[in-house]
Amino acid sequence: MKKVSLLISSLALGSILALPLSAQPASSQQPPLTQPTQPNSPDYNPRAAYEGPYKLNTWSISVHGGPTQFFGDLREYDFMPVTQNSSDSYSEWGTFQGGLTLNKQLSYLFGLRADVTTGALRGMKRRFYYRYFRGTYTDFSIAGTVNLKGILFGPNKMKHWKIDGYVGAGQVWYNSTAYELGTGRVIRSTGGTTNDWIIPLGLNINYELSPRFDIGVDFRVNHVNSDIVDATFGGDYSRDPNDGVNLTNMTSHRRGNSALDKYGYGSLMLTYKFGKNPLRVRKADGRYEYTPEEGFYHLRYTDPRVLVKPPKILTLEEMDSVAKANRPPDIDPRLLLDTDGDGVSDFFDKEPNSPAGSVVDGSGRVIDFDRYVRDAIASGATCSEIFTNVMFDTDRSVIKPEYREMLTNVATLMNRSGCRLQLAGHADRRASDRYNMALSRRRVEAVREFLVNEAGLQDPSKIIVDYFGSFKPIAEGTTRTGLQRNRRVELKLLP
Image 1 (tube, rainbow, N blue to C red):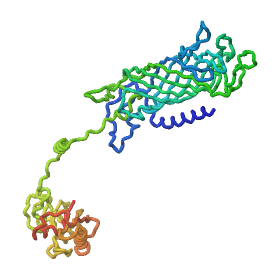
Image 2: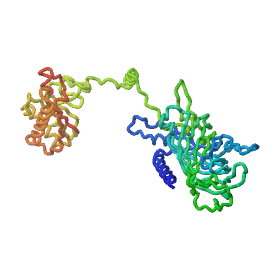
Image 3: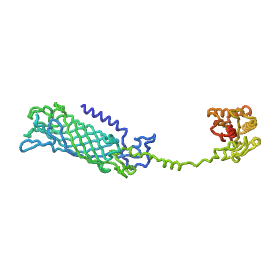
């Protein structure tokens, strides 16, 4: 039983390898024309593409037939005639078999096949035994298959060829009789049909003729757990049929001292592939082209990964064309400039030449801030967007006297209304980025502390603070005037 145990282990291992790639049978509907995940995508999964929009046919059935050959005690010549007497001759040639095979492809590399075969066997041995035998058999087996072509050559070569190796297990039912050479007298017989385990080993080669049909050859050797397939066991040299040896009552069919019997065959095979709308890959302009939207390819010949079209690699000219076609419109340079430094870009500024230190509204118009505060307090009106700047000396964060009254008015307005204040600190570029960030933070904190501690702002939570160092200039940093305008804290009064 060692061979049976080895077979079961092999089949279990093959099943573990095959099941993660299990195929989906072709559905009754056409696959949707959706593009699967591309192979270069981080989300790409071969199994997802395999079970997704591009399903494949997986079932087929084959009919086979051809000559048989026995390997055991009564075997002396291969397909050669043996003279029994002057008027009769015996030949090991002339026995045939035929049967059906049902195939299920589990993945591109692994599959299963179930075989039913019936046929005849012959053999003879002059030395020691001086007998020949004739017998009939029927066997059934299930085997796991491995796509040797796919492993050795990959899916992109020999696209219409399939070469499988297989191993399995099954049962054989046989009935044999051994005769004495020359006289034809019966010496031994199995006494009717008996059965034993078999382990089939084989090689199957197929060529895809059309979307529906394949043609091929199948070579198989069946290892039988018995040495009496030829109605003879090793060491049984007696020619007397009445010597007391009864093969029918043998409890074990492994009685002799010779190797176990084997038999095999070579067959021609015609295969019909099941499935709706079958396809066979075709060449177009010297290259194979897959069109899965037209139907279903068969998993016997098609690795599902080849159905996923690779992404197109653009040339430099194509990339330049795509970039130009998707280029956004140019930004108006006035969006990036604030000529008068009032906090409103020139694109929106209705008065782009406001005097330095002016208080402006959201459109950049200069307003009388004191009058605005008085009117707002008197009427109880809500705030409007107002912009102004507080300027600083080089490397300083001290508020100049000319800005104190303006900041006090801002605090008064915030106390009397629901206004909020956004502060943004800035510096010129004459230092490292880290230093400028710290300097702009000190400046914006100086304004905040003045509003809270000296101007009397009652609710500090109304102030929003931010700082940017030298990363958001409003003027060129190559002139004294430009550097001065960049040393600022922007105030934006918000409703």
